[in-house]
Each structure stands twice: as structure tokens, then as C-alpha cells.
Image 1: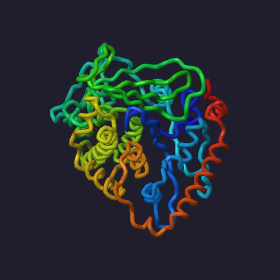
Image 2: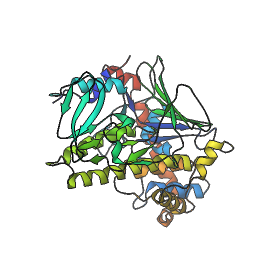
Image 3: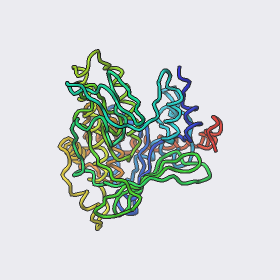
Image 4: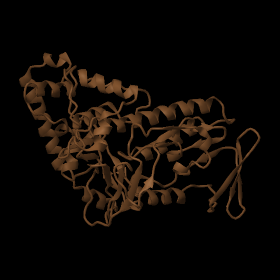
Length: 414
């Protein structure tokens, strides 16, 4: 027991709760939509909720799916409570995440890493054995660290993983510069992140106690900023090679449109523990690399989809992004969804079917046809069903405490 739980992380890492993410300007300069965590609506018998929405839209009823998401409605109202464990309750229908300050989170983890010896010295070079494996790390000041297995957590520099091969995604993800900053701000943060598109990229704002953490991403061909850092989006072709395992941005760098980068680190550590080897470079490494690559590629496709389906016109950055040829797996998803509203899912998807549908619907991509099963339900019954759902969700959201009240109750408020 390391003494780390959600409440503790929220208190020590300026944390807030997250019910989803708001997107402004992506489907068009004046557009806005929300991607919630958790269920959206509820089906009727054998008919899922998305075909019911499509059926109502075809009949001329304006329906916004996220109006039937408790996470979305609560987020808009600035309310939050942890979900109920009673699956019969509407309060069990949503999920949530945590927004955490990265530096503070690292400090918490470092302080509770039992049995770890910390050598606080800059890296000089890796001394390799004849078989190419890393034998010793040389640090500034003459210190040396020997080991059997090394984790490369050096970020995009990938100091130990340069020879692992790199697959660039620049042709699909046009942003190659980032500017990060933190702003002091009083008041109760919203329970969701915000991603606002601008003429040459986008700005992500993550709400934290004391002020948000912001990242502005853009393409250097369309904008410049002296404070910007160059980024090269892509992944290692082999995250695990020899006795070195690349973790985090050393393994894959994907722009932070969602909170997926920390989740990728978490998944990688769990995967490594599950495949921990007796010898380096065995079948465990092959399986680790397969899963790691597929997981990163699926996150990549989800992010690319936001560019490909953007609705901003007359701006070179966004016009070019919309015109790109996307990876085959993503194009198949987009084609099948646009045709029939079906969403094929691949192995190692981090974002689930409802999140894919919510994102594409928010971007304005609506199926040309809907599942014929939806025609087996009378239209008045569907209208009555969605009205009842809406009433339940609004009532449940109103009964929740404010986000600030929940944070204060666990001692995480400013």
C-alpha cells in the first residue's frame, strides 16, 4: 500500500474532476460540442440509442445526443458527484477522470516509490555490451548505474531508444509546435477540459486548482511563436528492444487532445508488469511491441479524425487537414459510419464506441441511413422515451453537488 488514492492525488496535485471535454470551433468557427465520459442515452429493446436519434432526425426532430448524457448535463451545470455503484440508477451511467498537475503528480509518485534509489544527475551516455544491450548508464559527475532492464522515460529525446526505429505521423497530424503555460485563476474550475480551434491549430485548457494548464499547438507553416517547442508526432516501431523499454513520450508522442498520454503511460507500465521477462528480447518483447503499437495507432486515428472531419473553411491549415488521406483503418471507420451509422472497433482501442460516435456526431458527420431496426419502434414511443430520459437526467444533475463543493469536501479546493 503506497498510501495513494484519488482524494490524496486531488489534494496534492491541484486536481479537479473531469466529466469530459468541450470542443469549440472544430466543426465550424462558431460551433461547439461536448464529448462526455459514460453512457449517452439508452436504447429501446434491440435498438441502440444512436439509430433512435437518427430516426428522429430523419423525421425532422432536432436531437442532440449529449442532451441525454448525465456527464454532459452535469458538466454544463458545473456539478459533480462520484457515480453510484447501483447499476439500476441513472447515477451509474457516467464515468469520470482526474485533471492533475503533471509536476505535482510526479512529485507524489517519487515520494512514494519505495525501494527506489534516485540519482539526481544529468545523463551523459549509455555504455553498451557487444550484443547491443545497455550495460551501464554514465551520469554527469562520474556516477554509473548498471542494470539488467532499462526503462527509457526521457520523453521525446528517447535517450536510450534512438535505435528503436521511428514512424512519423506528420502527414496526418499537422501540428509541429507547442507552447505551454500556466495561468493563475481564482474560482471553481469546470469539471471538464476545453479544446478550442484557431486558424492555425488549437488551444487545450486543463482546469486545475489555482488556474488552468494550457497548451497551444500549431503548424509552423502557418504560425510562429518564439516560445514554441518543436514536436515530432509518431511512435517507435519497437518500444521494447534488447533490454530497453521506451515508456511515455519516448515510445509515442501524440498531441494532447484528450488526457490519453498519461493513460498510455499507465497502460504501458501495467503491460510491462504482466509481461515481465526472464531474459531480454524474448517473446514477451514481441507481444509488448504489438500491443503498444496497436494502442498508439488507435489513439492516433481518434485524434486524426478530428482534423479530417473539421468544418472550418477558408483557412489553409484546416482546409489541408480535411483533404489528407488518412490511415486505412480510420478511413474504413469513417466510411462505414457515414453510410450506416455503424462503428467498427479494433483491438486495443482506448476510446470506446460511444466516444467515437459522440466525436463524429459533434463534428457534424451524420449517417446517410440508419439501422432499419429503428423503424420497428413507433415514432411516438421514441419521442416519449427520449423525453423521459431527458427528464431523469436533468433531475439527477440538479441533485448533484457543485463541483467546487465536492472538491472542498475532500480538501482539494483552493
